[in-house]
Length: 184
Image (cartoon, rainbow, N blue to C red):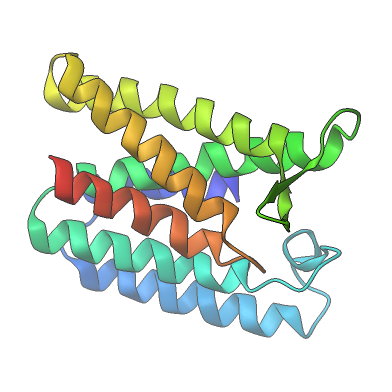
C-alpha cells in the first residue's frame, strides 16, 4: 500500500497524458483480480477481513490523476496520494497493533471499526503532510494555508472513519481532492 501509492507521485512527471495511467490502472486491476484467486501476491490479499481496497487502489489513482490532469493542477493529485500512502498505513498500524487504551470510536451509540488512536494518528499525520505540501505548493504559509490543511485533515479523517471494507482507498484521495478543489 505504502510503496505502491507513494510511487504514483512520480506520475505527473513521467506521463504527459492520462491514458498511460489508465493503462497501468487496468493492468494492475487485472493482475490483482487474477492473483486473488491464485496464490500470487499473498501479502496484498492475506487480510483477516473482506476488503475491496486492493481493487479500488488503481481505480482511485486513475480517477484522481484524471481529475488533476483535466484541471491542469497536479498538486490535486500529489497531496491526495501522499495522504493515502502515508496517513492510512499509519492509522492502520497504530489502530490495529496498539490495543491498550485504544478503543473503537463510538458516536451516538454507533461503534465504528476505527479506533481513537488510529484516527488521531491519521488526522495529525495528515495535518503535518498537508501543511508541508501546501507550503511547497503555495510558496508561503499563512492562516488561509493552515486552514486548508486543517480542513483536508478533518475531511479525510471523516472519510476514513466512515469507510468500510477498503473503500477508504477511494474515499480518502477523493475527499482530499474535493477539499483542495473547493478551497484553493
